Length: 129
Image 1 (spheres, rainbow, N blue to C red):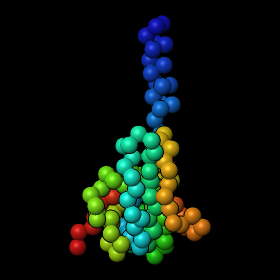
Image 2: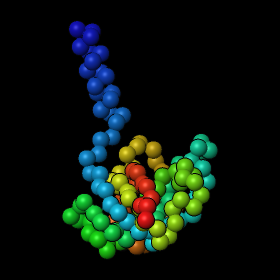
Image 3: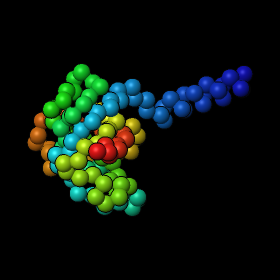
Image 4: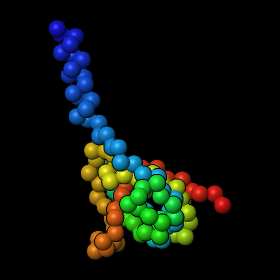
């Protein structure tokens, strides 16, 4: 009986601490505007996120079409080397409507008044020419 209780407790704990997200989309985008990096997330006080503006080149989601503009939220931007995200460059991104973590990020954005769809970057890589 104790073993059954422990197994159930582990399952419930795992479910409550993990955030499943089945709405991941893969896009090819061209960056229109790249926000400058913020202070490091690892300073222990604030988890930063910046917002970039991009245009879609290719999409695997029917709601997000080529030539559409969207906002992409990047968490802890200092984890990328300086100059990695550059305006005018193309990237392959995996995005979602959620950050995928329970961390509350402080978002730095110049686009608060703009009404574009907003997604969280989960993975990003440069498209080689």
